Length: 453
Image (cartoon, rainbow, N blue to C red; front, side, top):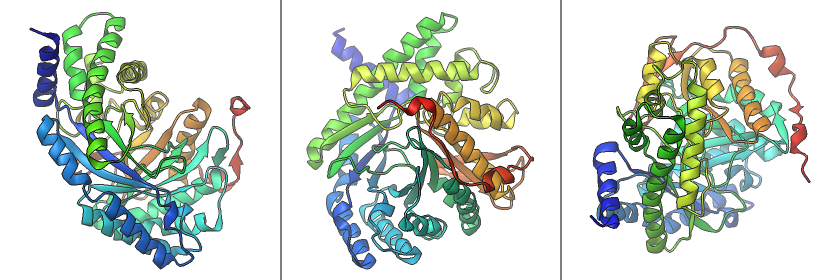
């Protein structure tokens, strides 16, 4: 059989048997030319530009998916961080801008719109403070809007004043969306070392160094990697790494096919391919199950961090060979609620909060889609963000926290979001206070190895 036909058949099997899909095609759109002295004018310009630029995004993605036989699951838009273009906006003005973003998303029929964001890793402007204060209400009153705040970077250190604010912001968001299992918190991410070209929600935004508009693609494929590893059971770790690399190459090639065609048909330049393995609640489409097929009895046991490090590195090595323009987050996501294997590991007690934190030192992002008790103190949430930011800043990698203090829930309860967001068992965290530490405020200095000029 000719090699090309064999590759085609392998791809078909990946789609039909192993849940291969294009997790997202995300159009990044610059809003820098939407700024006005009047926030109402800004909001209208934002709506007009997004609906004009992305008017055929959904239709084009669906057509390509059908023609190529590769499902394109999410169609999204990411915009310039809104705090940068608010002008003299106050809290109410920002909420009006959030409403304009939501109307645009609903008009386009996209799944989410990201970029209701602020970059405060070194300090605040007056606009930033008003913007961050608007986040709970904005997320409660919109359906499609996703938000993020970058609180630290390796070059700047960690803004502890911002982290202190976010404890309150997350708790308030949980309360305002309590009727929907505190869903608003699933649309908010606290970042350190945020990247400018991330196609994955809730943290996507279009950085100021990006073009006028761009198409970014995020692939999936945990099921494909798991299926490949089933064929090398009992063999050496070297062979496991090589198998993951080869599989990631094939997954990335499928993503490139869709990304290039999206670019051609929308007349928007192709940006980056994000190589992240993004799991779903489907059985067999799980990062945890990949780690277990490597030889771990249960995800979370000793050896889990090493196995995850191997997976993350091999995915990147294989993907980089397949695509010249790799970016975003790229690696393996470990969102608890979105991964059937992670959920099972938490329920049976194999995977604890502290082990998850250790795993974030080598995974793609960080503590993702984790539910905790609704009465957790604001300072504890802030301290969790601070810990995760420190891992990112010291290790010069992107880290993030997407945590849900589920209103009215206690340890052992389950928060059910449905769809790709899945369900999250409420996890136990330390009962000891971090309040005095968090209330100090200030800025944790940049690490010594950040001085490279």
